[in-house]
Image 1: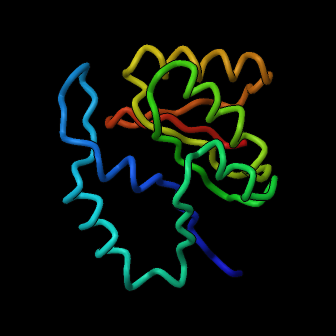
Image 2: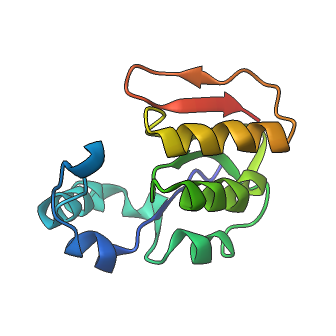
Length: 136
């Protein structure tokens, strides 16, 4: 099996962010982005980095091609809805559909409405760090 991780980050935007505790959301400071890239260097043969907006990146990923997705992007309601809609078909049946920040009302609402709209009945699970996930 050719295992590969696809990471999507619009690095230009990430590099311009500053650490902020506004509204309980932490933004990645440039030092963290650079440190993470340096940590990943030994594994770059297994990582495909798509330096683009998540909406654009979705068109580069074939449907049913991912075993696992972890959504942790823009936390506004409309952006979460867009990410859920754009990436649901990318995960194969039996794969894991997951994300972060269940504690944020916009994320919680968007995920619950998405599950209802798509008749998703598999159990949604949670971790202590506000991660939500289910098996597709």
